[in-house]
Length: 104
Image 1 (cartoon, rainbow, N blue to C red):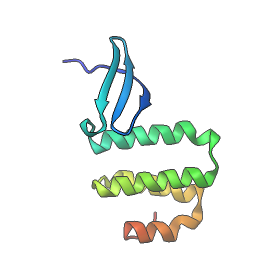
Image 2 (tube, helix red, strand yellow):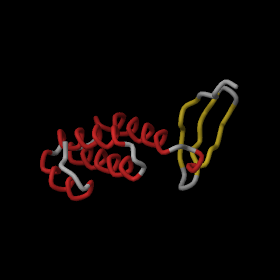
Image 3 (tube, helix red, strand yellow):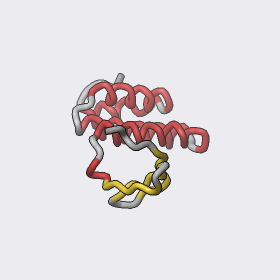
């Protein structure tokens, strides 16, 4: 089976809507693995960066790091934490408190 590819066009509280070559595809958030949701969040963080303040960007990466920690995605915790502290160096103490370790 070939995976169906498409573009995310909208999201609701419970579902994601994709535009595909076959029409609209609707999937529940719960059908996605944490790693896939993390990639989606990272894509949005990159896409929105040009229109956000560094503080808003840093907070977005902080949330991604916390999400990744909850699911044991250590590499993503590290990379999201680094991006957050690069954008807002003052987050070191907050990351240490929230993640239970020294920020990268």
